[in-house]
Length: 231
Image (cartoon, rainbow, N blue to C red; front, side):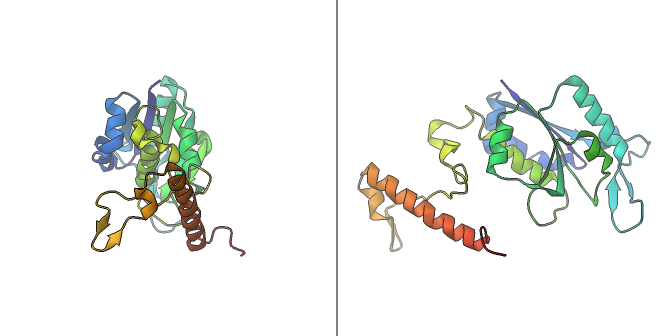
């Protein structure tokens, strides 16, 4: 099965570099995933190809218009069924590894990128199955979140990574656990030594060391991010 990801954006040029690099490029070359970026401006109704307008009720910022989104989304949905139609917005669920795992099992995904002040909310009401955020901060648009999603999803598709790059032991695959620190040659550099346990060839001890380091890093991460803290 080849996954298909459709991205709708007001600034499609944003994706030119990231979609032709590294693991995402490999996934496409192996025909594990097809990624299509749709220019919202191609679906504007007027001769000036306007895709934004002032917000009803006043206030600063421009809002992406409803008509171009309906035009492209209805066209795409008439051609295939989508397992998820993702609407990017600050009020959405913060994206995490478990979301990436869930999406990686799907066949067809659509990602709608917000921009400017936002998207006319009738688009979300009509089409969105999921509303997703990248975090508690503001970006110019949803394109960065879309790229984060694509990268995290594609690397999980079977056959994209080889065995030595397996994603199964990545951070956050086992709940909230962070992976252990990594080292490679040389064993000593500028007086800094690789932990001795990693050089001894005892796989049982290495496993135990990694589990302990993983717990330590996870606790540090939770404290920094105030996860589980009493409010």
